Length: 426
Image (cartoon, rainbow, N blue to C red; front, side, top):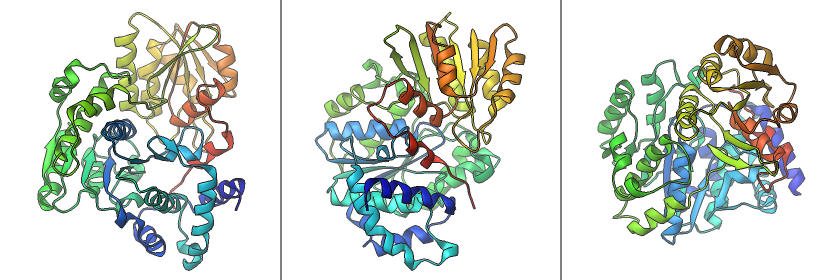
């Protein structure tokens, strides 16, 4: 199987949608020889901050000298971003080799229970990370936790970054319901670390931890101002990143007896962490400053608003905004629009996109003084906004991936692979 054939085969798996449950992943992993049994994991769930917290943990443990695997989703531009070892992406040749290995096992499933894209990719990642002899794997959930394909592992620690409103259609309409799904990653007598603040969500998590005798470490905003975080300037912008860092530090300290990690590695790892597309500030050759943030739900937008007010007070950027339909897009527009001098509304490359006209109607009401333009594409919006000295692009990680590519801010070329992020539940 060539690299192109492997990507085409991955695209074909999208036909099977996404579904909740562990049976297929467990069966496929068993056919693969249960590669998860030969690895050590930190399993990370939560509404926001999962990827940032994973990147911090990876950076810290790599600074401590470990060989660290990283599994995250979605990817920004190229599929290979999802699976990394010591921040080196899996090669396209390895993806092709592993897909060729996995494909015959898929014949063991009846057509009505064919493994989905994410189930196959989860097992592919496990096979690769085992072959790379990783000392530790930082393992991010896809959606939810309890029935997420990643939940077949037995981790050293479980992490729930926070509980906010997102994916209510699949996880439940209340914070308690969402917390119940995320708390499904908690394992018997396995440490749990969380930065959850909502009382109703935290009650659900506490009860589940008590039921499973899982030692609970609660990280509060006060922890973000204790050593070493009180004297560190993180490379990732935003007050919310300090909270993510506090969660990461708590995980490392909880696991000290299992995975020793010196304080210097904690500091060094945090100082050198990188996670593109999250409050990423770039200056283009034209001199234009661009802030790219994958704020894809209301909580994420609130963090972006806070960052704009903190780091760029008095500045009214031009705003390019594209959002998916299953998000609280009206309230997201209402929160961001008052900060903008001009707004360019775009479709996201997804069947689930909100059309620019719908976004424009809300944005005009929220900020009647600003110029509002409906654009047919992100490329068109970037061209129209090129004369503004400061530009913010936000609303979806899918959109940020496209922006990074169009602005030549990532050394990747595979635009056709962004479509692999698409999913629908069946």
